[in-house]
Image (tube, rainbow, N blue to C red; front, side, top):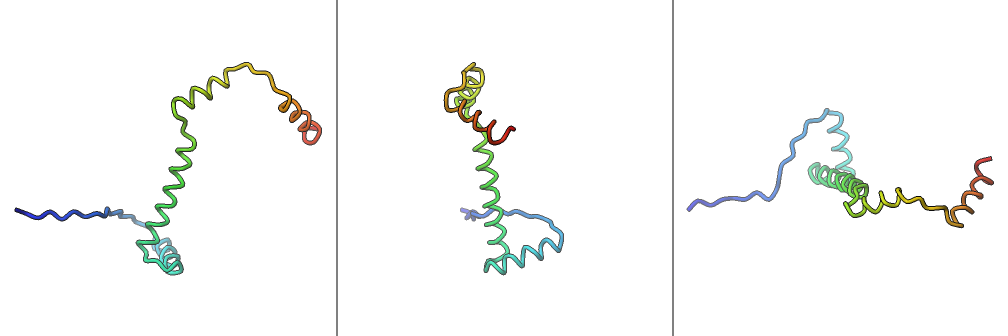
Length: 94
């Protein structure tokens, strides 16, 4: 029966200009990391930030419906909003 070796790592091959690679290698050395560890940590952090911003900006169907219904309401400003408008006019919009 043949034995199958399962590689738990995926590869990412990229091409970059030599000066960019040199700069990344310098940063990795300063950080005390291997080039691979440095690249993986920076790419992972960057990806996480992009995904967090995307997820924060994406509304669920329920939230979208609530948001749109509030926009459709013909609500009158409350006392706090009227006071804020007066303050804005007095301080900002002269």
